[in-house]
Image 1: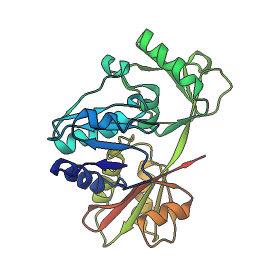
Image 2: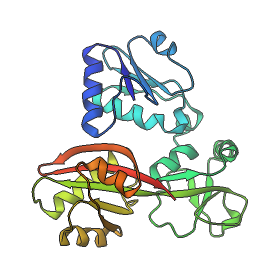
Image 3: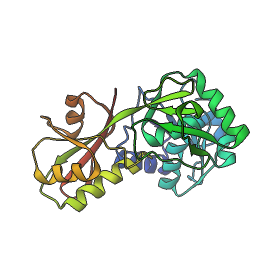
Image 4: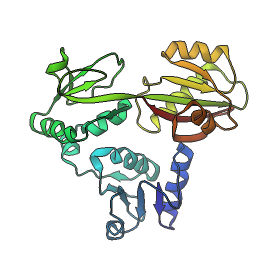
Length: 268
């Protein structure tokens, strides 16, 4: 993402996002954070999401793509500036997640974008939609999302199925661990959870831990959380993810003394 502005607030946002593992770029960004009057932010509205932040950081307002997960990034920015998050989408007014936001927190992706609008409409009109999961455990079902007993009764189907609902498929979620020095297993687990929390991702959705060295402690931890372990060569945390075949979502940052973590996904 790109932060537009030269004020103290802009620098604070850049530093805060960088510390969480987000890529803050000068070009090639997929999201803009514009600090200053909202009229300035409006000028940057195009095909990419835009978040407006007042000069003093008091107000954070996503202007576009609110329902597609930009609300989560805006929420993180409001935490950094200690400001007030202002959301204007219909689902946020109702206090429920859009289908895109539901997908985000659970590490899912859709195969037919055209059905998103239909399911979001049902959510707004009925106040709830029904979800059936095939083989995916630990899904978060926030307010407005209820479990369906049978797949063809569901509005949203997670995993493989032959029914007509919106199909969401799971990303393979990969956490990279780059050790600087030995640390306790409790600290490793805390750092992994903190990594997922940094992007509003369900902490139970860890599929793979990639690391550069074989370690019994990591294997025990992976067994505890239901993940597999892959020992991969790599000079950096990001290279561990890339060499596994994943796409980097959060770059490597030190989340604990002696440990750098990063986050990636792989579309199956």
